[in-house]
Length: 115
Image (cartoon, rainbow, N blue to C red; front, top):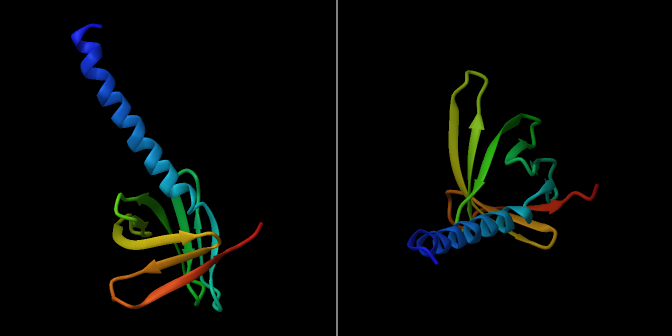
C-alpha cells in the first residue's frame, strides 16, 4: 500500500464516522413537534432547515446544526437579512423532545405530531 493510501484511509474513516454520528444525532429530531399542553410547534426538516411557531402564532425559520454535546445551534433568519444564533440543549426520547434554554431548571417539552 502506498504511503498516501495508508495516511488517507484513517482520515477518510474518521470523516465517515463523524458524518454518521451527525446524521444519527439529527435523525431523531426530524418531524413536527408540539409543545405539551400548548400550541407552540417546532419542525425539523431533513435538509437542515427548521420552522418554529410560538404560542402567540409568531413564526421563525432558519437552519439547525446538531452539535457533538447534544446541543443544537439554530441560525434564525430575520426579514432584514440578519441572523440570530441560539444554542439550546435538546434531547429526544421516543416521542418526547426536551429543550433546555439558558435558564437552568427551566425546560420545554414537546410531543411528536403524528402525520
